[in-house]
Image (cartoon, rainbow over all chains, first blue to last red; front, top):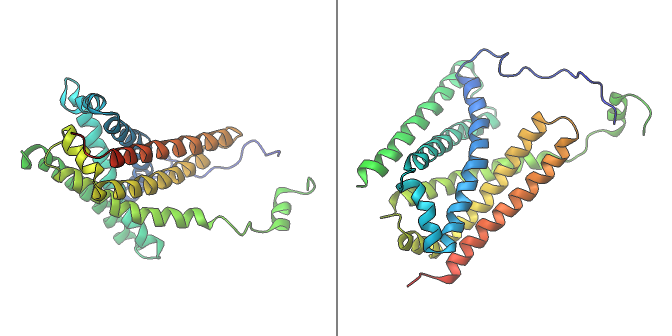
Length: 134
Length: 128
């Protein structure tokens, strides 16, 4: 099929003025891609290592307890923030899917709320794992 | 075919009468992901420890294995559809087809590996 070369494209990141709405919009895609690649790789590695026996599980766990534990923590905290941000904005999208929450003010506030939720939920989860549980 | 302008061909063919399933399945799996991922985070957070025996025992129980299988299925499907959308948005030339085929293969294989691991743990039982 022959296409005209320079097709008009929709405005990209550098065109829009940054605001909470467009920030959570691009964050939704970024967090989704991060979880769909890094997160699922980690998920499959965890299960395969566990199924493989004690040695392979110990190798998996060493990334969270051994000398490179900082790598495991950065990935873990990053993925949990991505999950909570994606959940928050995903629920916000359900409202928009039924035609609600398109008023500018409410929409903007709900966008900010998803970020506040993600930061608080991530902090609460890791406070529990690192302090509350011990 | 082969004659006329692009818009003329579109007018002649009309809509494909298909395509809404992607949007719909993305929403359905979003709901199941929401429930299952919150379950996973809570379950992991509440595990007494993360040593081999504890985690193996949890995954091998029906309360661990069955929701994990559902989660793997729902999340892999949702992620595959999401990344498909990203590829369709940014890949405009023929490489799009290659990327989409590779995506399907990788996510099919990834899901199978996850499911096989869960089933192997569940059917092997708690180790001595």
